[in-house]
Amino acid sequence: MMPMKIVHYTDVPAENPGGETRGVTVRWVVSEQDGAPNYYMRVFEIAPGGYSPRHSHSWEHEIFILSGEGEMVSEDGNAVVGPGTAVFIPGGESHQIRNGGEQLLRFICTIPSTGT
Amino acid sequence: MMPMKIVHYTDVPAENPGGETRGVTVRWVVSEQDGAPNYYMRVFEIAPGGYSPRHSHSWEHEIFILSGEGEMVSEDGNAVVGPGTAVFIPGGESHQIRNGGEQLLRFICTIPSTGT
Image (cartoon, rainbow over all chains, first blue to last red; front, top):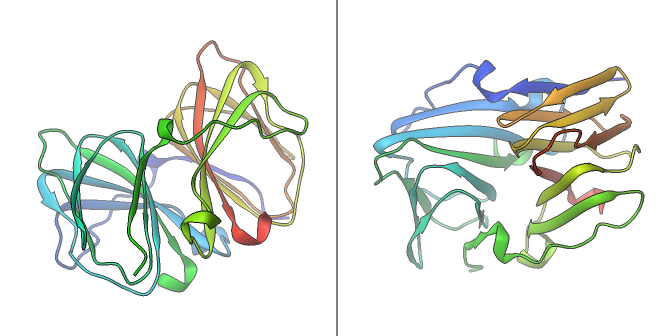
């Protein structure tokens, strides 16, 4: 039997996700390496002035904002998001998240195994 | 094109999950109703002294603790979890989460679409 994994996110190495990002780190807290069969969980941090790429892909994301303030950029306009906000980005939808605030923006972003 | 969904978790109705629970509410912040194809995101709150059922099932959970202090019960023993802790519960693993603290325990618990 595979054991339960319990880890504090700060004990997972922060990686540079690469691509058209600025001031972004990612920690894969639940991944394929843990035997997760269907989807994975990452914790992102974006420094003030930073952003993720504006892009789209066939798979979805499910996001939950932990701290800070962000701006979600979508095809329907932009929205401010903060702690406690959940976001579902359907497959095919263009998206970007920017940190226009003064605090570190921290959020969970999950991704299906088909998206990696 | 399905639009992006952005919702604060407190704007989603808190439901009683039923079963062998005490002091537990669940909010489905991303669900099948949103068109999520692979997995769903819920926010649970457990009052001091409350607990989820001790059970096992064939599907996994991926959890992230938002606030408060909880006790994860597993086949390998118990562990205290707090804000920023991620938990991967593989399919088939017996699990329970208890709030033995004095604060509200809040956490994200995701579940694959095959588990509902």
